[in-house]
Image (cartoon, rainbow, N blue to C red; front, side):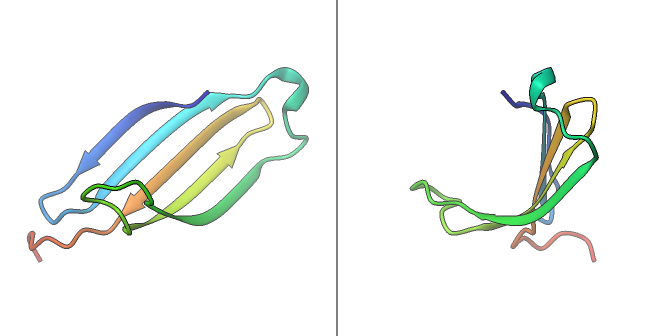
Amino acid sequence: MLKQVKFVITPSGNSTSVLTGMLPANQRPAQRIVFNSTHTETVDGPTKGRVYDTVAVTETDGSITYTGTLKGKGKGKK
């Protein structure tokens, strides 16, 4: 299970969410795995259709870190 450990929204509307978790000992990889991807919100609501850049890192000790970043539409400092 992943647990959200950080969520930040900047004035410009950018947001970052970080989740961490741990794999059982029998499912841990022999080497570090990094997976870059995107995620599109599909749930009805104000973020539906928004696209997040994502990075999932699984370490050999079983720790997992998932980071999702969304570029905002706001007008923060330039």
